Length: 54
Image (cartoon, rainbow, N blue to C red; front, side, top):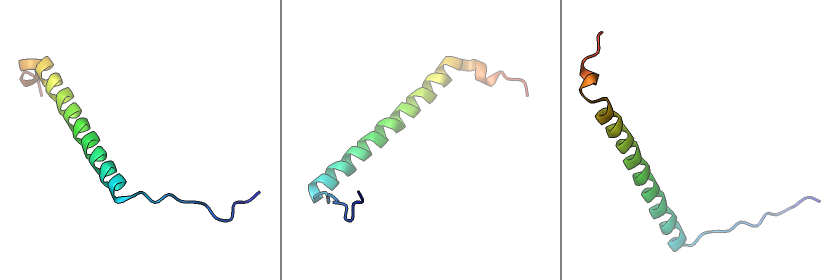
């Protein structure tokens, strides 16, 4: 059985705004997590990171 016409749902302006705000919040949270992991790894290595032989 083939579907000739698919129904699509068009979000309202409020839904689009909520989606955008949610995406921004997720992006900020992800960026903060990446920064936290980076800082934690630098702190964990401590001054040893400067004493590498090249």
